[in-house]
Image (cartoon, rainbow, N blue to C red; front, side, top):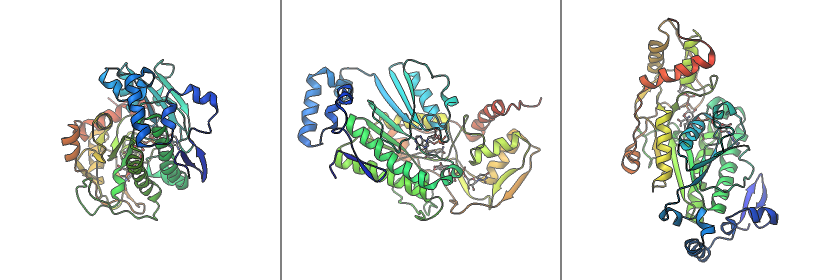
Length: 382
Ligand SMILES: NC(=O)c1ccc[n+]([C@@H]2O[C@H](COP(=O)([O-])OP(=O)(O)OC[C@H]3O[C@@H](n4cnc5c(N)ncnc54)[C@H](O)[C@@H]3O)[C@@H](O)[C@H]2O)c1
Ligand SMILES: O=C(O)[C@H]1O[C@H](OP(=O)(O)OP(=O)(O)OC[C@H]2O[C@@H](n3ccc(=O)[nH]c3=O)[C@H](O)[C@@H]2O)[C@H](O)[C@@H](O)[C@@H]1O
């Protein structure tokens, strides 16, 4: 296969050469779609230094203090993605493009930006190629709740593999830096605790969660292969359980389940045995970590999460105490391959990104409760 071809659903798709001439002429960075070699890369860098047309995509613009950035956020209509978009849009020099197929995300999460001159929203499935000119790609598109990623596992793995291939193809073509939101699930049911980035994990390759955790592991492999083979600038974040406003109310993840149940006076469904642990990161801390990683000098993978570790029974007790002391706790059956413990070692994030989380679980839960009460139209009783 020619190196300028990208895989698309078992068939091949030529990145640039076969595009209609009209599309070529629209692309200010057609040079980057040429076959990649050391000579062409050097030529492009030299050209960029002397010819302003190419400044858009070249690091040389940094030294000239041209900081306008066009940023693609895949999965930007989802929970973390929409908070990331809010933060990126705060910088008036940023233009943000969101590509999302709305499987678990919603336009409602982005309603304040729709129509804004620096914002564009595209209905797009990342398993198909996308042609846009951007400097940065935050690649988040993927269902994240176990209920949703297990709903159509073949689609989940296609999203992780083909979606990441397509975004890497785009990054290669336009010279963009790309960040993948990987997951603590790459550690599987970990035998090392807390988990640091050098741990290779303990993952069932044929289980019901594999479409997600093995999918993300392949996505990480692809990121590093494109980096080594094609010189693409990559960043990999290994995200640990994140919570906050705008999570889908019926998302199925534990924090959203417990908060919705507490507000609706329904029993909190702790899946057995309840002693399994997770470490919960508030979404504003997560977004801060992702941006620092993208704009920093380290490829990663870097764990981004809050090391505060809770059993699911402890989480239920906290929700009960903070939101509804009368609510009951019900022990229910668990699902296969549920990791028994999870806690990030964030030494690397602290040292390399100067990042650590600020919001404690007991401060973040009430912020999420407010959002859920508004959306469920259940104001707090006086
Ligand atoms: N929230 C967490 O605790 C957590 C933990 C680890 C990793 N992550 C990763 O962070 C990212 C965002 O997670 P989230 O919690 O915001 O989930 P989410 O489900 O709210 O957001 C995912 C977004 O991706 C979109 N999407 C899914 N498949 C797509 C496709 N094929 N093409 C285009 N768009 C598609 C969805 O519509 C949605 O808007 C995911 O990659 C997830 O794996 C999240
Ligand atoms: O952080 C991560 O890396 C991953 O974490 C989660 O996966 P998981 O930890 O299984 O998330 P939940 O579905 O919220 O489950 C957390 C724990 O709560 C338990 N749980 C879940 C739901 C519920 O109602 N009750 C309950 O006790 C589960 O058994 C599990 O032990 C996310 O869903 C993934 O997207 C993400 O990649």
